[in-house]
Picture (tube, rainbow, N blue to C red):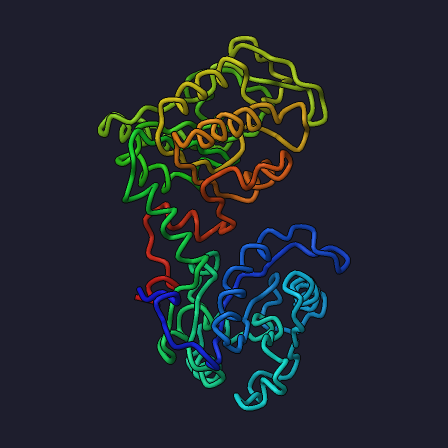
Length: 392
């Protein structure tokens, strides 16, 4: 894979830059700017190299039709303020654009194309659409790791028609994930949560041969508790998961990987209730298990204390109610403590996990925080990502 930082001569080149600026927008206001902040380094880098930057991104799922509610306009305005540069948003039909019409005037250095998913050719990975996009630039940079699991025109097919490079953020993401998949410092631990164990089974199976500990928390853990014959009351639970759980234990035994699940819990009678700590044999039929208990937190802290690498994907409980955020906060604090002493390498991914870190203003206290939802998970499953394959 070629990296843009290794490309020497970029002056006056028109760079087609694929970014993921799919941020949440409510009533025209961006409610989470994390993804915008992460693309600032590549913008600064290319401006220093005196490039002209043609940016492609998307918001939401317009399904190939123009939807003004999903315009990139609020993102352009936000980015203008952040970099103190004028940005031009082109709303014209992409098929009518010509390279020589994009950058007019010496002050015009950054141009956005309107939401690329307004064109159904994008998600179809259309060859002609990719060729036309390629005619607008001199080279292509993919700095959207979070879109790289999609075989879309502006992510994978376009690399066939332009010299193509990995951007700074994409390189950082790949290097961070290598440290939890192939270039591992052991002991290594995975803390994994979420509501459905079936959506994470491929990840768990792929990681077990490489990891020393898998800690299962969140709604997923209810399936494990139920499997072991414990009462889980009205807690969230996925049906027909016994064989999946048995597969996990069989694989863990084969590769000497320890599986940890809650030993005590915090429950409520509703999602809005105050937390009550209970032993597993004290859970009643009208309880919701919504967080891990103090004994479980201590066990997890001990494992983190003895780990050199940690991967965290999924909160420990229903953190939206502060009464059930204790487990997630305590896990975060322990990892941060180890990180500050340079005793652990930490990778965090998943929207809910990032939301937990934002609540305690700790997103910068980890070695790497991935915003790449599906791509992050598919990489951990060991799948080949089309956007990465296209750069090789």
